[in-house]
Image 1 (tube, helix red, strand yellow):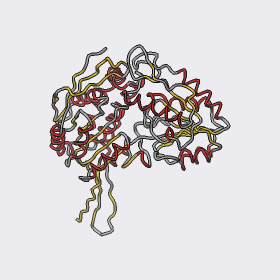
Image 2 (tube, rainbow, N blue to C red):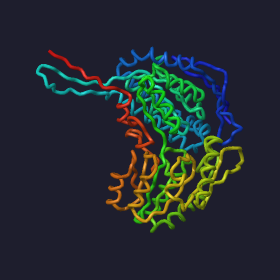
Image 3 (cartoon, rainbow, N blue to C red):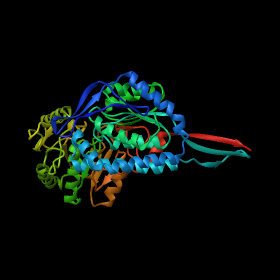
Image 4 (cartoon, one colour):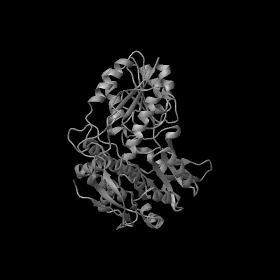
Length: 480
């Protein structure tokens, strides 16, 4: 295996060492130590925020071309190292290497896209109601942004939070998930190499208390968080206590509706992709599949065969189709939900067992559970593992009602050849993103990302929508 990395905080353009407080393990082989991670405390957070605050005025007033060029350079450096970064990501998080490298390339594209957006921060000129008065609006950066990023996309989500914050003139303190610090550290090394001014981007490592201290800091002007609902509520309360702007992405329980008139092969492939690739650890995963009765049995039989054939193994092995779960906690959670689903009346037709392979890791066989009801826990709570449940419904109307059940509203999909049903679904399903004849998971980097209800709070992430969160409007009146 590769050598163990000794990680450091990155504050005010300097690498700040600390005593190793935790380890990052390879979920494909828990005997492989990916990185030793330093601890930190409130003083670490204070130093990072102070550095970002001091750097803000000059960065905010820098030429947008300077910001654009630096972001573009980061994107180019990521692309040039995509293989190495992809291997590190897969080794640390557990995605297969094609998935890991694909995520790395997505991060590079995000930086390059936002390099263009840095030049497009615009305002408007409008006619005043008063003669002789000119009215203009500008978009201005806010200050220091605290970014709390998750482990399931350890380079793409840091990219889609940090790149727009930097593009529009803000400074950043990022706290990545404790499961995947080495990947965030590698991104920080590239940002440092690209030549960003001191204090503009800062990285702090450690457990949840570090994130808590960051969110509570009175000099943090905005917080972007991706994680679970319970933590999101805590983050929001802390940020609101000092009037920080807040953006929360808190998961999903995404329905894929399969109608009788669909292309069966395509529906099975979309369900397989949406539910099981990335080991089901995507907030947009197709975790509940709602199937009309005319095609239900054929669909379940075909999907079960595809699920059973998936090759589970080491994330870096060439023949692996599904890697391990990211941690022991994720493994235990997944197995417990499978147990709950069967005790509540669901029928496990394939998978759902912990696996012992050549190396010790967090392996589980992908599970398909049928004969579930829409109000059972397996269809209401986010599992975040390779588990799909099916619900049999009578017709489209019942399918739509089932899709709209529950508290989440991130992504929703429909498989149908009917333009009538597709258009009606897009307009009436309660979700922030809809997919027609596509997996619920898988989104483009240049368009808005986000959900409704308890999935999301605040302005949308990603693409051209990012300017809404990372800037504020100033209205200027001039009489001449």
